[in-house]
Image (cartoon, rainbow over all chains, first blue to last red; front, side):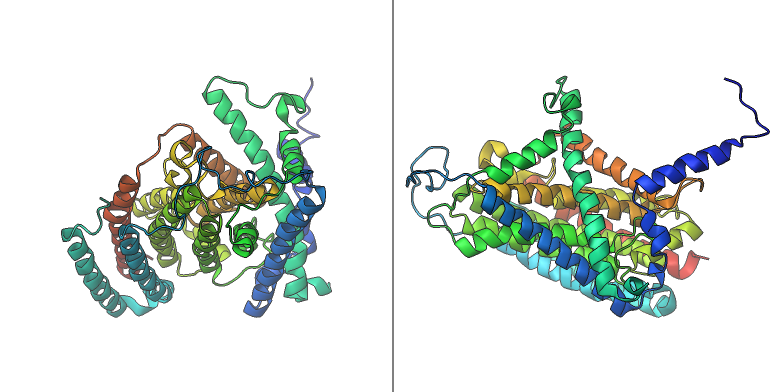
Length: 160
Length: 329
């Protein structure tokens, strides 16, 4: 096939192809609503709320649709609703007591998550706070590290 | 246009568009995973419904919709029914703040990253709800394991994304991408901590979305199906979809905060394509890992997290802070 460089610029062709693909990909929104980037926080929160509402509605709709479309047995049998334990008769209580190691994990989680909650505001302004902020957060993390080492020595981090 | 000014309406309009696209992409993501898994095991995968099984997701969906809805004896019906809805809600709502390109973003929150992490963290509530309400031992143990794993790996996930916040000085996802467009992607600049943070984030992401090697909560050889053991029909389908959406949005977040989001090495390709390409590559890599590796034991999981990932991500955080304070331009 003859390819005339004078009349067709290769990059322009590519641009046409990608423009077509973009249209297919649904980025028509980018031209229609190009202002999104300059949202006020209130607008952004409202938008996030609207988005969550749609996800809730979609999740609900699927369940409601299933309610209308589902098949139902003519006769109910108590065997059907019995908890599944690979065909064995369920034995004893289901809601049993748990190994305390789960409790230890929960404690650690609370500790480190609260730490993260304290660190996030600092993480945004690290540069502005400079050396002083570094010393403050460093000592905070140092204390946390001591706690972590203590837990390590006590073998609390091990899952026996 | 009035729609732009009114955040709520725009959220709804974008929600309808983005959720439809994400859910459709997820459905065929499942097909893609089955095909990849089949190729890895020298099988064909789905072949009968449509060309090379392309209509399989539709068939699966129709089948799930028609299944009988069984409430196990002794189950807590309120919690049992609420859990799948909440799981799907939290998984999908995460996508609200994901900027798919410079313009395509439903809600450009100034604390977008926090929104994502908060919704990811709150996911343990419906998971435990399902585990508790099912009145099934497999579900209960699976729920317990899932909660323990998810809260543990939440810590390195939060800390490594905080590394990105420290480097860029903003929690807005598009702000993070704009910083990377100006200063280079975080995965290679500054050299070293970025790629380590990315790898840690990726591992924590695998654990958060219950993927092999971190899928002990639903280890099918010992727990049948974990929390979803007693769920039938569409309720099971919601857990399934939520898991895939979670993985998909998680890949998008990883692409945004470490791989430059919609930025690409050349600019004749629009931002949306770069963003989608990065997300899909990460999404597929999750399945590559899934079908390659074996499952960790519970104790190995916990040791890996608390003995290695948490201190490493804390060290990275300190390094990032020192770099930003004294060395960054």
